[in-house]
Length: 227
Image 1 (spheres, helix red, strand yellow):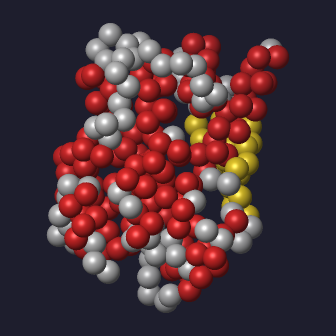
Image 2: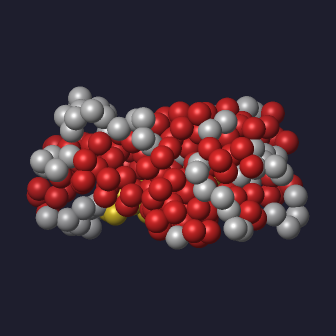
Image 3: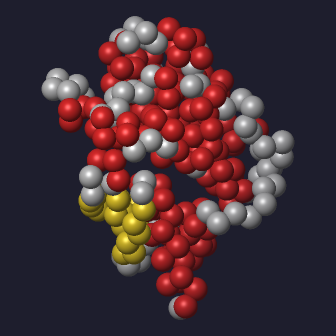
């Protein structure tokens, strides 16, 4: 796999190119081709690295913004369609490795898959070059998408809203855990549990982990609004 142009686009030259290849490997491909690891573990790692880097940069850029606004900005930047937009700019559809079923189902242009691949690549950069390398890649590929000011219009970001309510009421934030997956590789459904600091658990389902988290948060918010 020739990834020279992609490495140039993300501003990171891999010492361990195998990490990048794994980041570009969807589970549908790994299931069909023996000896290939999929990118799901790297996606998990990249998601955490991305949130930390965006949080730090937002903290520096918007020095007067309160926590709620910083949370909203971060959520706006790391949400699925934002990551998918970055994936399209990087032309990841040229590089991602898919199984035949996923290919036929249009996975190469599916936002959820592309967004997950961006996170997996960031996880790979982190393992290859450390936190500073991942940070530089993130700052570069996100440089044109930051808002001009901290104030953003309210959006239906249930996770951010639930975090604000939870911090205000319980002085702690909710925890999200992937509870279950179902369905074929090309049409998976994800179940996520959102647990409040008080112990109540609310389940959401979606076609990606992020969408399931939003549904779980919405259910929790509905519950809290009735109290």
